[in-house]
Length: 138
Image (cartoon, rainbow, N blue to C red; front, side):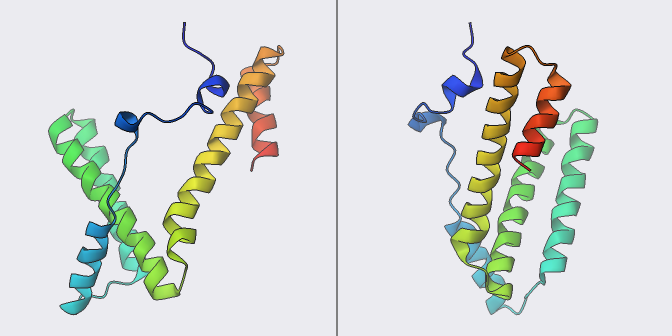
């Protein structure tokens, strides 16, 4: 029987299941782009994220898993480069942007899910539990 999420989130993450993204590659891509005069704006980076997301959706819609995986890699890279754009072009702190934003969002989702499980375990409906969690963790 699977443990409720609240019992799993406090467990140490197994090294082999922990996804680590080497953002040094994105830094080198951004630096090389800058050296060759390709200084895209944050707005252009946002457009690129939308374009890559549309490509992922298109490949998933036709069931092409191999192409969808390639496009997901492109999407992930474009998101990392967007974060770097915020950092370099707008003076945001590197860790406050990418790592900090991810950490805050992941924790919020974690707390919401734990709250939803607890409220449902107390007999509330799923909808009521979700509404309560969103109010507590906006």
